[in-house]
Length: 266
Image (cartoon, rainbow, N blue to C red; front, side, top):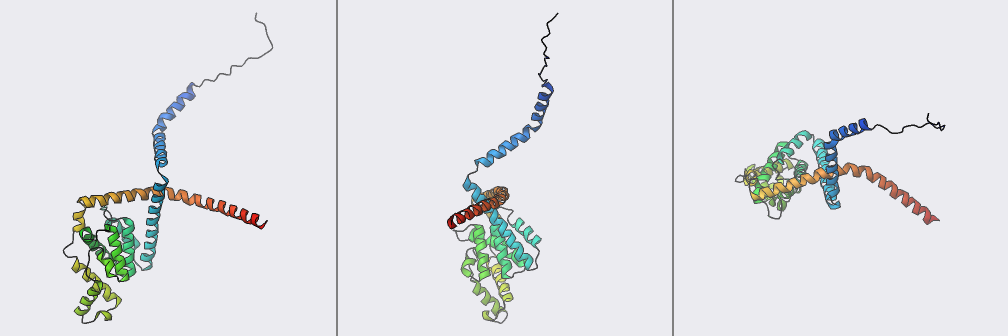
């Protein structure tokens, strides 16, 4: 007979077989998700501060441009939906960055052209800029500059896109055709003169944008366009994060400023 020592012995070992099996099953189920998350974090971690800053700037510029365009288009009683659809189609070949297209559209709205005239002018400018623009400008820059020239009645800027006929000469020709002088033209008549002059000046360049898309020069522009889209996408990821962080930083700075102000008073 065994001796009784007055103690109760409890077996504290736990059977973990089922638990381990469950964990293993969960690991198999979420393995792909875990891998994707790790890859995403690694990609974000690999981005330099400059890349993030440039991306945020690019995305912010496009967002601001679209907000400005909506204000101008809607304020003038036009369809912002139609404007967006045209711009999306306009940039779909990768030759003109969205920001330049938006700015160009806005400039022509401010000049007072009708929606149809805006679409016609931008289409023509894309063709003339394909091979006729000044060499220091990209297609987007040339188109944007030319629309600024029309808005401000500056012929030099219109030259950027390859339409070299002076805007004042367009007015003169149109005025003579209706028995007036350029000084007698209304703003509406000036706009009509500009549309007529641009169409006449570009008659041999129609379709050049489609041609340049298949050249080495066009492929380089499309590559640049792709990188711009990438920066925009990255920027759109970080902008909400920064929007949440910046108010916190402002509050901290304000608190520190208040502290130093009190110390200064003491």
